[in-house]
Image 1 (cartoon, rainbow, N blue to C red):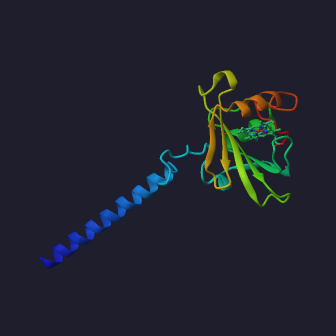
Image 2: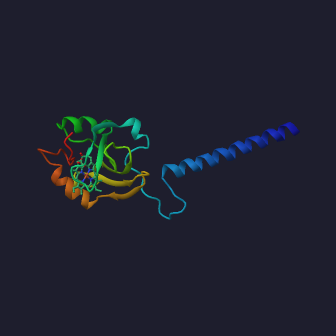
Image 3: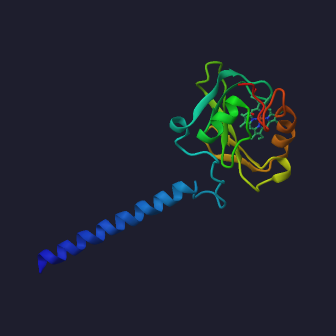
Length: 168
Ligand code: HEC
């Protein structure tokens, strides 16, 4: 009898720990911050981008933004269209730009990203735009006029491709 009671007790403890872990995970997934009433939107790129994305443009001075130095990465879906420029980006493709304060690209100052989402913004090429701070917290999100305005002009041939502006 005593043994059985102890056994049940340990099961409850495991159950509580699992519930607590699940709550922590759910919080991480939606990037919630208990100090803010409205959590920032989730990034359009995954947390493991360093491992899963490919660099398509190495560290160099930015051509335009009020930035210093940048690197550009593409996910698997964006890679061929970005490099070959012979086809439009497919639904879900992501291009990520990392911004740095120093010429060696070690001191990250922020991120911008664009993800093609079918039906998101048809008149402007269906891109979902984001700006993030150095901690990868989204600070601007959606159909951002400033991004669209510039990328519509610099993202057209011969210099640009399908709303992307960098010459790889
Ligand atoms: C003043 C013009 C301008 C504005 C405004 C602008 N961009 Fe860009 N963007 C560029 C240029 C030029 C590049 C090419 C890389 C470089 O030289 O920095 C670029 C590159 C990028 C890239 C890498 C893919 C590529 O080659 O185009 C992303 C992602 C990006 N911008 C996102 C954004 C987002 C998000 C915003 C709005 C918050 C934004 N941009 C606003 C000019 C602009």
